[in-house]
Image 1 (tube, rainbow, N blue to C red):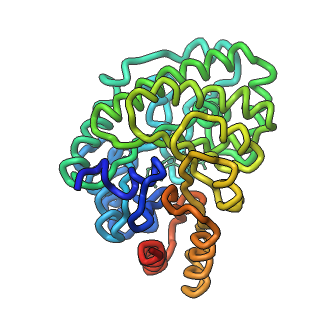
Image 2 (cartoon, rainbow, N blue to C red):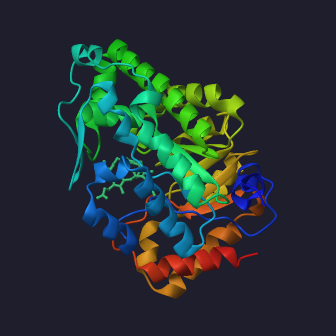
Image 3 (tube, rainbow, N blue to C red):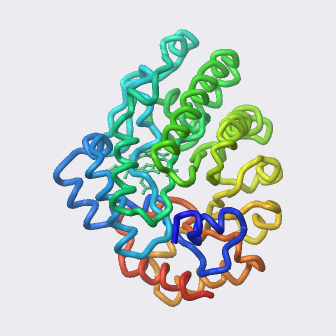
Length: 340
Ligand code: 1CP
C-alpha cells in the first residue's frame, strides 16, 4: 500500500473509510525515554543536523505506538541562523543572540539559498524515507507571524506584546521582515516536498494572540501566500493555529486541505465551520495525565461529536508534554484505532 493510499493522506482529502488516523504533535519529544537517550548523547542542535539521528527519533514513536504519520524532526527556528539571526537552543527554550527591535535590524536580515544552507533537513527526510517507507511524512515550518514573534522578542514570551507593538509602530519594516520569511518558507517547504515529504504543516503557534484585523493582516495574509505558492505541488497543506476559534470564519476561506484545531475549541463546531476541509485534533494534552477511563471517555466524546469521520485526523490540541505517561499514549492510540 503506497503512502497516497494511507488513511492519513486519504483523510486529508476527506476520503478515508478505514480506521481513523492519529499522530501526535511533538511526538518525538521529551516524554519518550528513547528520545531522551538520544538527547543524552547530543545537543538539540547536533540532533537537528544529524540525518541518521533525525530518522531514528522520527521512527521511535511511529513504531512504538503504531502512529499513522511521521513528522520531520527539526524546529521552526532552524531557518534563522542562515537569515543572519543567530539562535541557540537552551534548556529553557530557544534564544536569539540579538532580537530585532528596529527597522535597521530588519535590513540586516538576509535571504539565503535554502537548499545549500539546510542540507541536513533534506538528508534527514531522505533518511526517514529509508527507515519508514510506508508512513506518510509531514514536513513543517513556522508561520511567518510565529517566526516574527521569536525574531522580535528574542525568545518565547507569554503574550508577545513587543511583536504586536512592532507591527503597528513599524508596519513597513514588519512587512519587509515577514515578506522575507514568507519567501524563505515557500522555498524551504518546497525543498522538503522535493526531498520526500508527503504533506506539510504550518505552525501558527502565536497567531492566536492577535485581534481579528491583525490576524488577517499579519498572519493569515502570509499563510495564504505560502499555501497558494505550494498548491501545485499537490500535497496536503495543513494549518495549525493555536487558538483558532476567533478566526475560524477567515480560516474557512483559506485554500488548504486540513486545519489543525487546538484544544480550546469544540471539534464539531470547527468541522461545521470548515466545510470541504479535513480537521485535525484536538484532545487537551493534560487529559493524558488523568485516569484511563476519563481519557477513553474524553477521546470517544470527541470522536462521537463528528458525523463525518472520513475527514478526521486525530491529534492532540497542542504538543504532548514532557512526562506524559507512555501507557496513556498507548491507550489513546488504541481508542482511536478501535473506534471504527
Ligand atoms: O530536546 C529538547 O530539549 C528541545 C526541545 C525541542 C524539541 C523537541 C525544541 C525547542 N524543538 C523541538 C522539536 C520540534 N519543534 C518539532 C519536531 C518534533 C515533533 O513534533 O515530533 C516541531 C514540529 C517543533 C515546532 C516548534 N518549535 C513550534 C511550533 C509548535 C508548537 O509547539 O506550538 C514552536 C513554537 C517552536 C519553538 C521552540 N523550539 C523549542 C522550544 C522549547 C520551543 C518553544 C519556545 C517557547 O516557549 O516559546
